[in-house]
Image 1 (spheres, rainbow, N blue to C red):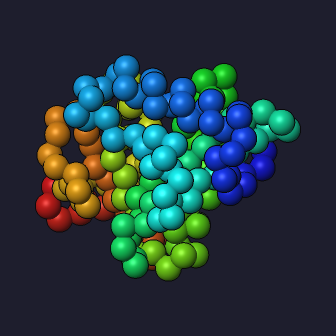
Image 2: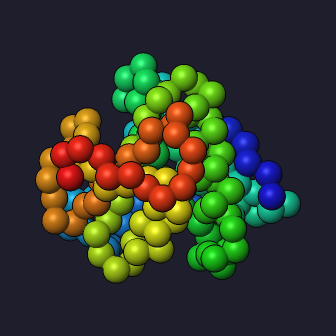
Length: 164
């Protein structure tokens, strides 16, 4: 598997991300769906990576810079046929390293609270993320779980963040 910066010009990536947004909109109420569409992912503060197995896209993930030291994970998705195969772990490891390399000291994310998102929440906890209060422009929402991680700390059991 190779992970590359993606300019979102390829048909496979565009269709993969459209499927991601459509799935999330089908699961969560409109006011609680925070997935970025293609225009949102093309903004200058966002970098998108796609994961490929040969010529087949198997996952994607993005980082959005919130400020000089804080970034947010966006658009994490694994192809349904590749779930539980290590794609998400490899992508998440890549995103954490990229945020650290870019000088970020904190990495946060928003994911769903429904059972569908339980595997994602477990993966984030495995990588040292802990629940936190809403960050950025987010507000409390029963359909959302907010998580964060300080990047200078080693991965291990998540440490609760004040405000939660």
